[in-house]
Length: 267
Image 1 (tube, rainbow, N blue to C red):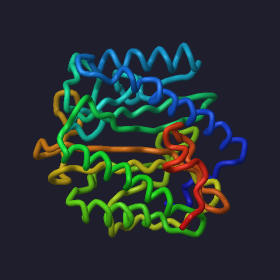
Image 2 (cartoon, rainbow, N blue to C red):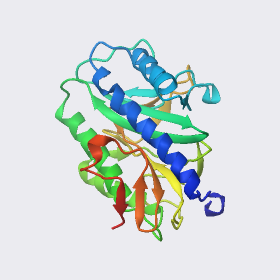
Image 3 (cartoon, rainbow, N blue to C red):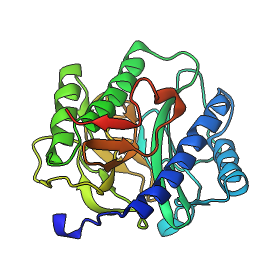
């Protein structure tokens, strides 16, 4: 797998920074719209207009292998790949919005959880722990580190909190291609051993479930993934590039400047 990983040039990394910033701005822009009563399709339409009209960019998801919408919006027990539609959000829902944009041929990929109104303490904890899993995994990344550290860090946190880690979906390399090597799995132990080098770019996107890690795909639409036991799921995602001293978060949102920071020195 390591031999198939594309090491990005400084010029390519700069283009990935631009794409990553736009993807982050989509999530920042949509936040005030994530309210009870709005449909997921309405949210998707707002984001598509922002991506195309305001940012002169392309939605990477729209038309990808036939996917019909601009973003993935996954509510409550939907793990990932939720197709926006007529479903209205309700007070207490937890919602993942996953955005990938293309700008000048390069991808920016990120996702965030939103809480609609007031939700249960268990849902709050699930969202909080999932975000912490992402942050701690990012902080463990750097040159000379093994990619398996992603899974080791996340496994330790999730297990302690009583949550399970989805095994059927993973992070991935990214650049001019939407999905490149390496595969980035979030559980441990795992066989995906890669020694990291500067210029490697990939996503980390842990999906944690309140119940079983097992999931199922909707047979009718071929996309929507839900937890097998209908318990809630949460996901956060960032795109990072390995640097000489650690990593840089290419999809950082302004709200994360203090809690995470753009430039990470590896532990």
